[in-house]
Length: 367
Image 1 (spheres, rainbow, N blue to C red):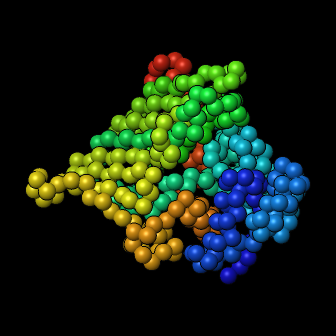
Image 2 (cartoon, rainbow, N blue to C red):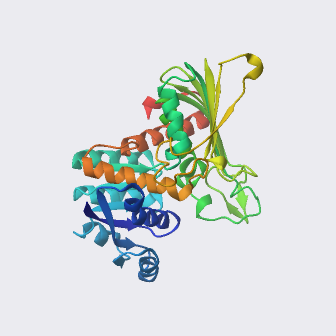
Image 3 (cartoon, one colour):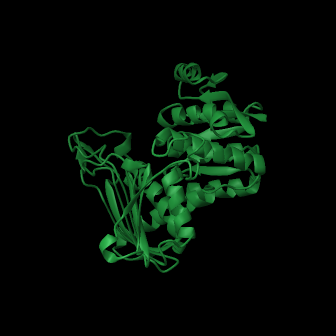
């Protein structure tokens, strides 16, 4: 075993999740690299010190540049608003340090392109924090597709739906200002990444992107609430993707159904330890979706729990992510999703915005 000094920039929602993940990943997965929580950065000295004490870091700072440059910080985790991602990542890559960056990769497609170029120039390990695709159930769904258990794929349908802004009387916040903070910048990257994981690249898109609640407390909302995408994958398969932050009643609607010539797969993130499988085996009268409860025979489950059906949770997804990042650093081999995938997601988002504006199909390769 060898220690590696971890620096995390941002101590809020995701900063805490990554701090907990890196403090426990060695015990959970027995990784060869064992993280040392070296330094955390926040916007003020007071908040940084509070996070240091709460999460168990050795040191704290309110200067992300100092964290990136510190020789004891050997790997960087970016858990800041996306407008800061590019500058931080490029500074880390200039020093050859590995970077795990929260999604979306960049606040714009130009940001993402610059970050990919910097990563490639440095040769340093890089990953994007698409955690939801890492559940044991979704990892097993990918295996079922690889094994052609449902035959040739004919259709992909997916959604990423939540309701944290469904109430029209909620006040305007930073989430309702600027295109990067809208539904397409916040929620859709996860489900587009899901589509890529199962189906491969998207070749073209026809989209409608809209703001449902255009005014909040007298303040104009300058980004979108929901979007519907009709897509064609490079494989030729058609698909639909819907994302929304105003989907009343939905709390964690990361959901998909994949139809094939010999079966179908269905998943809903509000029941993340269950996968539904339909196969065209046996007499028609006995067919139906079969409920599969995740357990030790599914990917990345056993390190957490020996009991089938006992389940994993949201934090466990982040621990799996930390494990993958450490393995990539240890082996020097990329672990998907890298910055390249983050940029590909941003390309689809750019194409969707253009399609919605023009009311035409748009080719992703043009972006």
